[in-house]
Amino acid sequence: MSAREEILQRVRAGLGKGDAATRRALAERLLAAPVHGPQPVVDGDLATRFQQKALSLSSTVERVAVMAEAPHAVRRFLDAGNLGQQAVLTSDLLGLDWTGSGLEVAARPARDADQVGVSGCFCAIAETGTLMLLSGADTPATVSLLPETHIALVPVSRIVATMEDAFAFLRAERGSVPRAINFISGPSRTGDIEQTIVLGAHGPCRVHLILIGEQQ
Image (cartoon, rainbow, N blue to C red):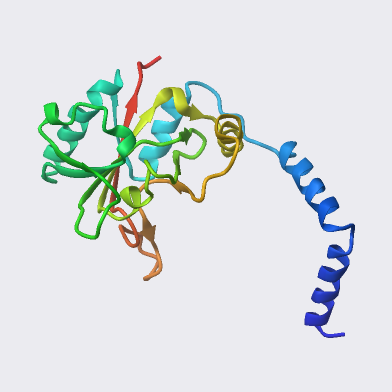
């Protein structure tokens, strides 16, 4: 028997275990009560742990007390980097006072020419300094993926300890999985050429996080 035939035989044997309805019911039971493997202990303030990990991944971070301060924090970052005063943002952020910050914003999916994208996030993961973003009509993925600069607003109340906690949060709050989930851990990077790390190889070359909420 060739390796190919052996693999196909195993697949056929697996498919033969019960009809489609039985297999579906089994899969749904496993998804409803997932079994977690060993997880790290994430002690202390989750926002502080998230910030430390994000900084280690070459993100930059500013903390503000309330969401209303976020547009001015975005303006400060853009001014400090001489990055202009225009941005595309996800429409779930339109309620903030962008005009008062002096920025010119457009709520739409990003295009090739857009240099700055501003988004929120579904949640953030303290263990790895990672953002969890969900695609949707109000949160197009292009805003965080196409522009050279991605700025994310991160409420500290939505920082969880681990990846497993993030998926549990998603199931509890949304019930179903959206078409796309994007995990962002700092600027995009590659080490393909002589193992030299290059930022911005296939996505934003800078990621700035604005943590929103009082420090503990």
